[in-house]
Length: 412
Image 1: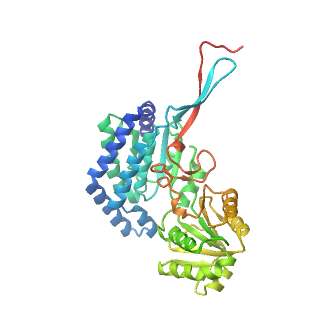
Image 2 (image 1 turned 90 degrees about the vertical axis):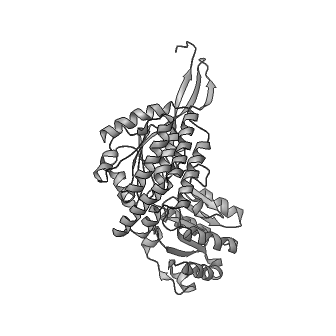
Image 3 (image 1 turned 135 degrees about the vertical axis):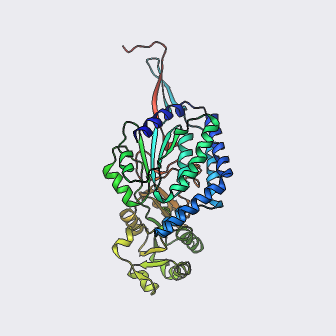
């Protein structure tokens, strides 16, 4: 781990001074390598999937692990999108002439070395590598053991793209050791690593919060809500709620709790429940919800704060927007929440008073994603308020330093 840290630190200094064109050439070569090695990627992933099934990996993690041509296409498009984005590094803003005669400004610079710890999703390997590369950061990647072959196949494509441009292959390093003690080493390597970004289950994040010496950019879980307001358009409400829950179950921006205003619950809940049941979703409701849909299971207290990552949904009938906001701010993991309403005042109240990293009006929570936000690939979603919040793209992987331009001035 020390040798990995030393190599990453050296590579970060090369990347910090690399030109925009050189970084973009590397990204485009990585995209070409992914496309050209598609068969190897699918074969490696197929082996990982077979091993995962033998080890009884849960359904949500299997869904995250799987690669197919569509997902590889999305990975390639994400890389190209990052290459097409403006390069922030070296930009100087807020230039000001001070009374002393000096000029003062802020320069956008890389964070340095970023360690990323994640489970299951091979696409994180390419997303993280490319965002770090474009923002001038070296990265150390520690994926889950269940995706080790997929991640190594992707790493080969990254190395190929870097080598073609003369950039150090150690700019992106994937730890091949699956022993969990490696994580303990990585999160305490303060001499080499500037920040850790974890993407994994609640247990992993809790461990890192307790043990890490390197600063974290993190989110603990994704208990996302959709609130159907008294003034909701019913067709929009049904479409948004169904999409937010059933589009994909094993993702952090899927709806886990549905709140519905009492005034519209009787007319909307039966059709919503029917659609969810048809999709195979188990509904767990409060007493009021159960009286409207008698087949609904009883929700327990834990259900209101649970990230199911599965076809399970908690349903609560609320008196109106006040109770909805109070419920969300109490139980939410501060990830993503959405209101369905045609009343502008209620929409404005919701986005002002709900304390989450993404808050939406009349849109599915599934849009809380770096790609959908135009950030290119995302490196994760942060529910912290410092240093980055929400989907973390290029800007979240940089910081600023003060720069001063003088002409011989001395302080009197």
